[in-house]
Length: 234
Image (cartoon, rainbow, N blue to C red; front, side, top):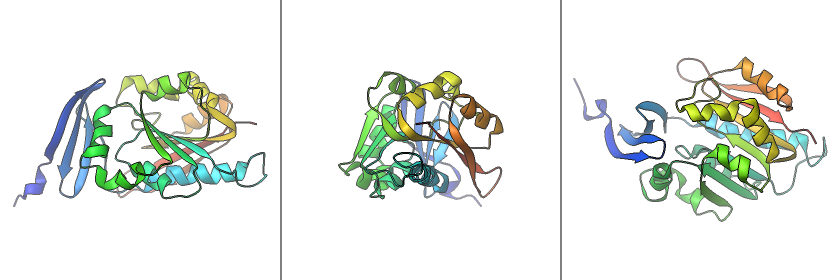
């Protein structure tokens, strides 16, 4: 017997600068769909939170100089707002002195500021340490004069499975070089992916990152989510 929750309810549909984005409610879950492809929902969030934790742990291991202990007052750049798990988790940690989130879809930003996704991110957005920048991350890392202690990428589905073709450039040697440019010495790059990518580990090493490793986060079904970690040399 069918229930009202069998069919997702479209809460908002907008034509953005990169195509159509849709916010749906499916039972208790909120879902973001881009150009007809499922991107993310509010079902879990463990791997998005692990993205932040892994970056902070790697940053502490690298220290202000190699092995010199935790770095004071770090500034984290989060690439991709999504449903807000990474932002909310970073804001819940007192260690981050500044939290900058770059999101290119104005609809997603609006859903957080004044829409249904505010239930996940309202407290974080009210945190004076946090700011949202509406921009394409590729352009941002190539143009900004700011630098960061950690860069946490949660763009598309990861390096090997991008829904938006333009996002592939972020995981290329040129894109990773731009990421390294905005990192301070011994800064950490953490990359979320919907599936493991041994090839991407090699790409990180070839781009000059050190201490490259991958953490797997089990999921209910299918291959695990992963976080790829690399440290910029001093």
